[in-house]
Amino acid sequence: MMSKTIRIGTRDSELALWQANAVQKKLHDLGYTTEIIALKSQGDVLLDKPLYELGITGIFTKTLDVAMINGQVDIAVHSMKDVPTALPHGIVQAAVLERANPFDVLVHKGNLNFLTSAGTIATGSLRRNAEWLHKYPNHQVVNLRGNVNTRLQKLEDNNWNGAVFAAAGLERINLMPKNFITLVWMIPAPAQGAMVVVAMANDNYTLDAVSHLNHIETEICTHIERQFLKTLEGGCTAPIGAYAKYDENNDTLEFKGVLLSIDGKERLFIDKKASVSEWKKLGFHSAQELLNNGGHQLMEKIKMQLKKE
Image (cartoon, rainbow, N blue to C red; front, side, top):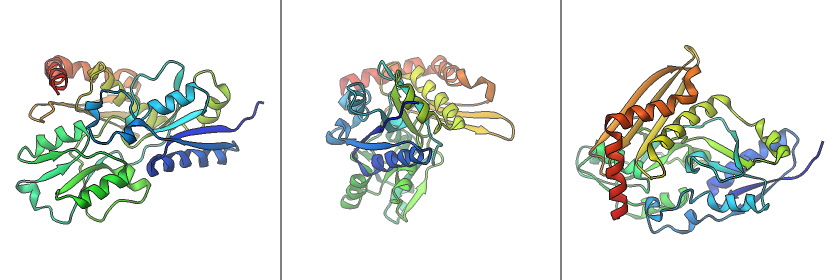
């Protein structure tokens, strides 16, 4: 059988490199030879605007997509929530690794009194912004961009009450501060906490190697969440949360999805239980139900608002 060094493409942030190294170790344990190639993405360079204002799909993944298509790398490792639901032609999902903590956390400065009064919270996420304002309409939300380390430092340097982070990112590189609370009420981004490996569709050696890393339960749950996102969005960025969980005792799936207005005042929520046999279309049907119950109108409002901005 043909053997080659599998070149692992990654962003050059500490978290992205941690993820690439985790994949490298798993491949090494299976006997494969690998090399890590780190590249800087546009999303890591353009830090002065919220992501939705940049108008680029897959801003954190595009650089690695191009590198893979050009033959510079064989696979790319991503936080799955950053990956567009439609992959570029010729690139396929090769494996979804077992999911870490899917939830968001609020990192604060030791005093939570602001939760019952006025406060200022930082996030660069449209979804976190909207979900926060829905629960705390009297708060101000300010833009916060950069890698995990940069955002933690900005929180330290500014007079904000707190900032919202993905728990998995902080836990993976041991940066979870002592002052945090898990936001169990906040519906996570679709596929948050999961890592995905993508490869070229015609690279059978690499696809076979990486397939050993796939975690079927995480693959199913993230498929549902991303299908929900894709059906709702139709190519438009919007405040959307989705979380599917497998209950092995009953062999069922629980799915929670949310669509909010940008200011958080409107919120459409769905909570469904289904047999695991229904997983392939659960996200689609849930999104359709939401669209038919006010979602179409809300998506149109969001599109109009984002165009103005």
